[in-house]
Length: 153
Length: 134
Image 1 (spheres, one colour):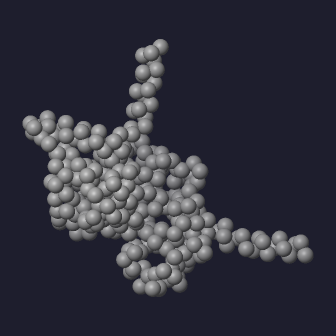
Image 2 (cartoon, helix red, strand yellow; image 1 turned 120 degrees about the horizontal axis):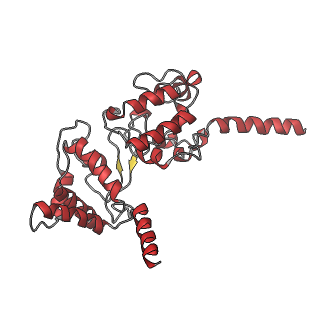
Image 3 (cartoon, one colour; image 1 turned 135 degrees about the vertical axis):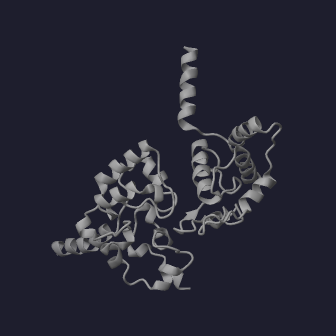
């Protein structure tokens, strides 16, 4: 009986673990202020180290905006992203310029979302995690925390 | 000893950078007055600037593209869709309390939306409007 209970608990907790992507405790304040003002401060594990490097190398024209931080902040952010980057092999190709929303992992996780939800003015872009993942800022991406029902109205 | 504690207090205040919107406005007023004798800030001019269409950026023709034309309301980033807290001090007490943050965003947004640096006079008017709008 006991192993069954444990197995059930493990089965229940695995999907939840996979959907929890909190920022590491070591996240520098510069990452939150420089990379979390115009969009969510994305979990660093959602891009591989090489893609983060390419992103940091082109901040002067970051999707049309000049997002270049001070050299000291940039160094701090680069070190942080290097240490906490995800496994590019598992995530899949992020394209050029790298976009989290291009990776196979992102596409697979969102394949059931109808196009009209993405076009909703309250969503606006795939960069806007919080439009549906209401607790994304706390790293909670579980399906229980998604506000899609509201979008159906 | 006294001078040491005074120094410590000074260092603490430099480290935290907390100021009031009035202090931040006054810094810009002083800069503006240095080039334009008798400059006084105007919330009305600040409002006109905030609502102006500069139209040098297709996606963000003016401040209102992201901040809406009502600074007491929350805004939404024109490209990413991220929520933006209200600009007006009356609706968001955190606004205009960190001089470095204020300078950073004037720097970025003036370049991107206005197409040039903003003058100290424009910044003083802008802070006046955001401090007074109800």
